[in-house]
Image (cartoon, rainbow, N blue to C red; front, side, top):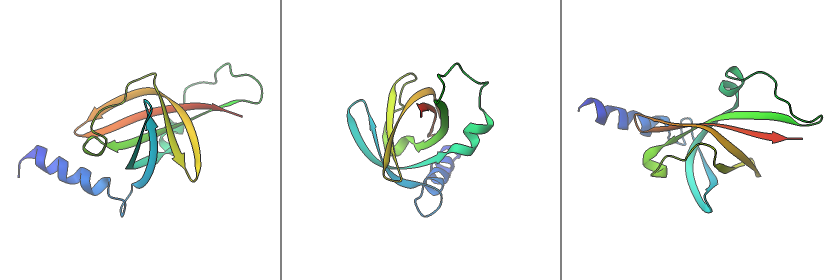
Length: 114
């Protein structure tokens, strides 16, 4: 097995719903996808930028989302909106950064909420 095949095999384990991922509905560019994703609110907090100029009573929430490129089939674009069903509530995020490394899509997302 070559290196690329090994990475693809590892991604299948990492994005397995029995391991770390959760089957989740997401909406992007008017289309709905039901795919395994990993949402990490803790890692995003560690990358948190300084306080913004949000109005009183509003706060900025951010998270990192990991998706297998094999499952989604494309890399979402920066500055677009993506909706994610999180425990029955659909949150609309803005994509602040989108990367794809070795078949894994990494999205940095933020939302302004009350």
